[in-house]
Amino acid sequence: MTAMTTPPPPPWRHVPPSGYVPAAGPSNATHRPALRRWFAVGIVLLLALLGAALLAWAIGATVGVQAALRATIVALIPLTVVVPAFLWLDRQEAEPITSLVLAFLWGSCIATALSLLLNELFAGLVWALGFDPQVVAPVVGAPLIEETTKGLGILVILALRRREFDGVLDGIVYAGIIAAGFAFGENILYLGRAIVEGGPEALAVTFVLRAVFSPFAHPLFTIWIGVGIGLAVVGRTPLRFLAPVAGWVFAMVLHGFWNGAASLGLAGWVGSYLFIQMPVFLGALVFAVWLRYRENALVARYLVGYAQAGLFGRDEVAMLATPKGRRAGRRWAGEVGGRRGRRAMRDFQDDAVELAFLRARHDRGRAGPGVAQEERVLVDSLLRARQEFTGTALPRR
Image 1 (cartoon, rainbow, N blue to C red):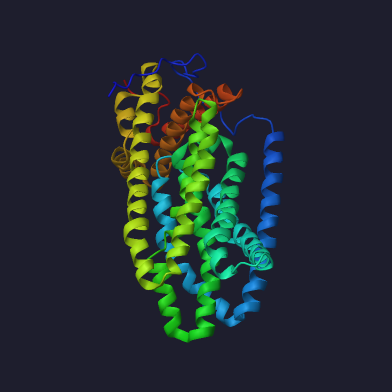
Image 2: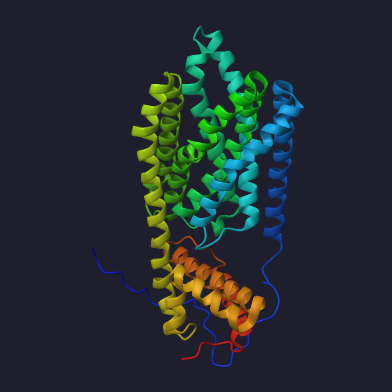
């Protein structure tokens, strides 16, 4: 293994001189890109409302309003496990809450409604061609349609939030949140059918199979699309664009195996669960945790140059480079400055981590022409935060 070298300070580094006072107020960046972004977000929200309306109509027509409401409450339970798991992975450089909400809305409303409609059309086409839709649709149609609609959501988030999308771990987080939303919408339908067709016993069985044994099923499929898109974001060669296609194919294969095993009865499902799904799930978990700790190393590496220029103290870099250090920093700031100090320390940490990722994007040639302005905004923001919990703008040497 080659030693990790410290990158040289970038020529565009905005390191303040001694006695520098950070600028007050928000960034002076143009409002035009923000208006375009909010227009695009508005379109996504409109599509989400239309998808929710279509989904509500379809579920209500299939199982009735009362069963749908009961199923919705039960379907919320697995979300209390799945969503926090992906938010934990995202703690290092937390994505904007608006982006995470958009991701969940895409999965629960848009992707679910589109998949419901397209699955029906696919089943009709398979029937017209003389094949049994009960066999072909779950193994071929559902994986193709559902992983495509979910994967499109990751691409939409990438287009809307390009600056916040830093690589593979972000792809996993967005894919997991989209898939969790999709599973939520799908679970309402399946749990509602169980209530109508079999009562409480059927509801309990369906809940155990979908929410207890396989709450991560859909995220397990879709995260590989996120991995592929994340590799395309951080890659340096034209071959990186093959990664999203490979991730999409792998997601469909896993999905197809899962649905196919379910048609083989209990023994086939258990065998698939133990010898295919669980190993893949554990492998994905280890991979995601490794990526999280790799990001800690990236933060330490890229902040060293700023520390050498005087923006950070050595103790601050050590604190910022590990989750344990950041927790200790927030705890200290809370003891010294109360809730306000703790909040300022959290903002300081978020800005510093984002600064490291900005530098990493610049080194990959992905930072864009406004990198100097972005850096200035981050530096001013973290200096204001430092003033809040220490009363000084520059670190104590």
